[in-house]
Image (cartoon, rainbow over all chains, first blue to last red; front, side, top):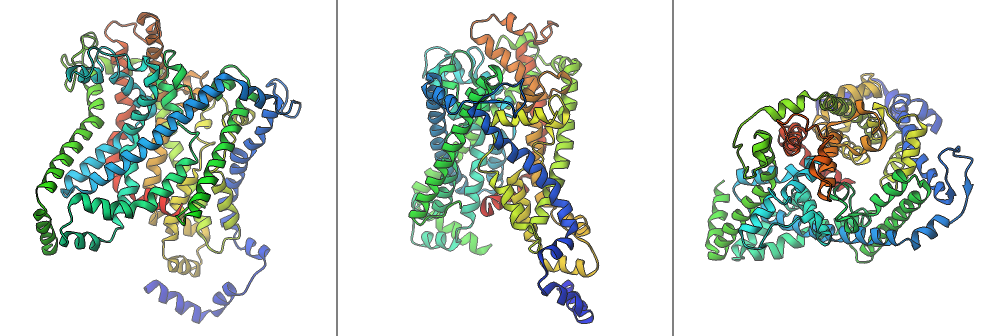
Length: 326
Length: 309
């Protein structure tokens, strides 16, 4: 308040200040008066062009027979050859199946568990306990995938793995199983690992949305004698709907992003057929075999399909009058 | 307070169903916490247990034969000590430069009268929806002579668009009158940034610092991709990743001795399992000790970015 009035007094004393800000200046004049702002943003704009926009030009190598030894401008153009190879390569369809399979499992599991956990945490009235559960559930999100994968593979190991110990003692399995050697189980293991790592973190956004709900709704429900399940079903879940939809849209755009680190770090020759995804395919063809063009073609395929998914989901949300991303 | 008591009291009227719900809920959440915590406590116990004894199994939450040998071994290995320093260095330099740079750009695009406000904002936000991909990025880094250099950890990721939006949203919440009066007092945009924006944005800067520091500390893929032939630029996570890859490979038929010959099993005091557990603790302890204290901030920062982004 004091600051505002001080400014007002100054304007009265020195009217030129307020006049100069109100008269319309030319673009160039305004630019000259904002040298500091320009100096603070232009270097990063240059950085942005170099590191984010110039690599887009690198997409051209998907249409070339790229030879790293030759200069970037001196490459042979071969059209859609690499895309043709891609779509006839059995490995490509296998990694595509794995990618979509794993990201669908991750999407469904991720949503259901995060919403469920947020609802359960929200029902705790003991504040200390609530805070502790939240802090502990965030923990796996902060550790690296290397540490997570190391922990998971240790927990799943044949001799000392806690998973086998618990399952054998509960009588669910007769003898320890080498889980990471069972290729058909990989999608499930990957999905559960993802849930373990991120479920706590993913509740944050839902819990924040729940705090926006008008408490009077709950009070009215209490007076009407609603049970906990009824309150969750008729107040909390409907209030979360817009948040759920916008997060769903965002995640549909990433349907080909099944993650890379988990699959790469938990993958081994025994589960390869089900653990390799598009990103690993790109890495394998590109970096290990040096076929930069084919790897880039696969990368382009991924980006373009993601874009189509994102726009479609966004369009559908618009049709149904739901909140949307852009 | 009295009112809250009243509603609590009415809730208890709703009967046995609610009571059972509470029992189930608390039991389930305690179990969940066990699942989240146990693997870390178990690794901690193994890391303090004598290596040959660990192989017999049965170590759960407490070491059976306590020893410092695993830690002594890990910190006696020159390559691991070096990778630890590189990890610390990239975390400190990476966080400082990224937070300062991102805050600067965020400030400029929060100024309503800035001529390039729209242009800069759109240029940054667009990059959230596409990227060149692995190979073009690799070729760029190679062309820029950033291969086998420390700066490849810092420069390519200096600004994160999500962080940019979070900080911008926060700065936009600072009362406009503060900027106006500072301007009238003759302060330039840069002075305003240093003297007003930075101090007032400390909560959001703390959040973003945590995000960036965690990202830097946890990175291993850029080491693998760009610097795998420079042993002196390796990081802790990458060293752990190599040990993990060795034991993954050993599962597929190679004998254990084969796979671990290069995993520093030279002294018979240690085993790969113990080394892995010890490295796991060393690689995650710094983060585990910091993040609970910033919880209040990152929860706010995340929702701020989520709503306005």
